[in-house]
Amino acid sequence: MQRRSGGPGASGEPEGAVGGMVHTMTLAADSEVAGRGFAVEVITTGVHASGFGELGDGRSFSFHMERQTLVVEVYRPRLRGPVPQAEDVVATASRKLTDIDMTDERSLIAAVRDTIAHAQPVPRAGR
Image 1 (cartoon, one colour):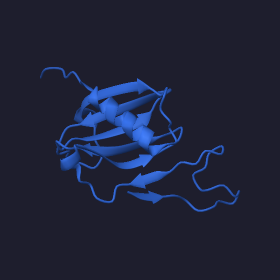
Image 2: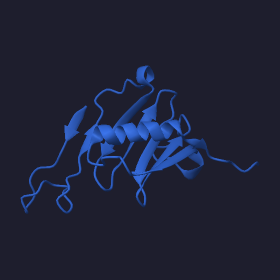
Image 3: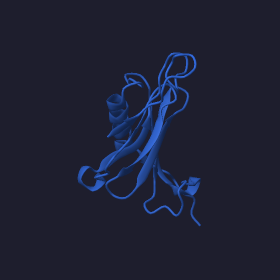
């Protein structure tokens, strides 16, 4: 993985620092998803943590924080565009942020992986 962080800002704090908390973003260099079944491609840590990745079966996912809760959405495989739409969501899951270190990538990635394992299919109205 390749770590990206900002340089010092005018205040002496690193770029992206909010109230003394530094947010980092990591990009996966090579996505060997098929062998692992789970890969986080982009992750931002901190109080507004978010990111996205891919599952081994071709589905993608995203995650974000919402009112002290980690929210994960799993999308259908082979999306038509770069930005998933509401109809592309096939499963969702959420969990409280207790016991998750939002500043530690490994802790956050583990929480996302565990949350995806408990994702429930999104009910669809019949046509």
